[in-house]
Image (cartoon, rainbow over all chains, first blue to last red):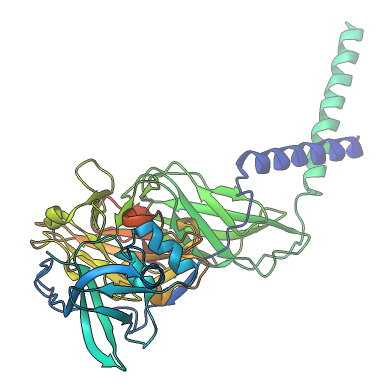
Length: 153
Length: 301
């Protein structure tokens, strides 16, 4: 009798325990991996104590204004002005772009002294692209080391 | 009559035997044992999944792999009373049925197979937050006819793209005009459009490399982070693989408490800028705490 009661009690307890656990168990199917936490570097962020007054073009002064052209098309005697899609395609093929101003064609370099067709391609198709930066004339070539570009009026 | 007495006697004896046996067996209760008390889990942390759900994650108990270890027990306080929740052998759990803006304290203990809990515990305080993950949360490049600005929670109760002419409503902005840079930042720090934004927006100097907001777990209150009105060059932070998530807080005009948000800038295969031509854009997912003054979390141990 004692054994029967013992077995029955044990079975009852196991039944309750198992069912209670199953009823409330809710875990995610996949263990979530955690994101990598980092802190901004000085180089990447620009904290400003006093908010700047936001005016669209007042602070920008273009040193050269013109249109984005393809040197390849120029060399082939075709109309060198390129659309955005053409410019993107040319950048993929490492074909050089340049800035055609009223009186001069400028090779555009960035501030790291790298030839910068990629930035020019962003503004291909813009009628008046302003480029701010230092202009130098080297062995007959006009070169601008661009600090900033944006469409201008 | 004799037969009735005999029957009563037998019934009495049977009942006595049963009671005696049952009482005797209580002393041999098979549930009582000497299983060790499990050590407590540690480092409970949380993230908001939706306006009603919080995902918890913790470092497993040192007893986790023992045969007698049953799992964990979660207690939730704050809001409507909830019965303790039994959790199996895992290190994460999604709590549902919560209310945005209510600050809950989640306390986790270990449990052995005899249902004995650890003496220690780990806890975190957190609140669920609304989630916005539609495909149209975008800021466009300068040359686009669409806007370079965004309000995190606009008049239609969701994030909205804004043009330069709506600068006063901007919370965040995008500026791609500088060579080899792609700036994302507080509206006041993005030099596009006219007018001064009415709400003050600050960004923390902590960020996460991730492709989802679901795996940004925190134990400390977000208001302990280092906030400022910032302009951040996304290309300087690009690891070539993941998006970037930032904590943003907004002091709405006329309010004294901040609304907190997490903003995930997704990364496409070619970088942060997606789309093509003049309509390239960055795409975002946003977790936004609609109740001001609730910075998602406070640590409690």
